[in-house]
Length: 138
Image 1 (cartoon, rainbow, N blue to C red):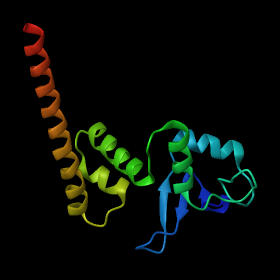
Image 2 (tube, one colour):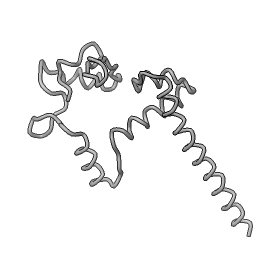
Image 3 (cartoon, rainbow, N blue to C red):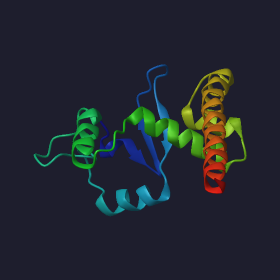
Image 4 (cartoon, rainbow, N blue to C red):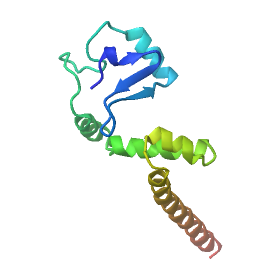
């Protein structure tokens, strides 16, 4: 749960599980929102009763109920890492910093799992194309 006191100079200070704290850079579009809505103190993200969101899982459950799309914070973390890996031309160091892994090996393992899935998906796409082409000729 983030407080306004944790936001300063385009960064958010968070208590990290394996370290005492971490500073996370805030994307510019979110910085704009923060700067427009800045309060001297209190929670940054509040519910309709003025209380902080305690469990993001409740948000994702409601989102799934309303849209039928299953999301989770972990899935978005994976998606962000994969997007960064693709946009940075495979720069594993950038992904490692984004994920805040202590070990580059952990990041490599993480991306290898994605690569295997991407290869499988690509193979399935090719097979589907071959089968549909064959059926079109028949």
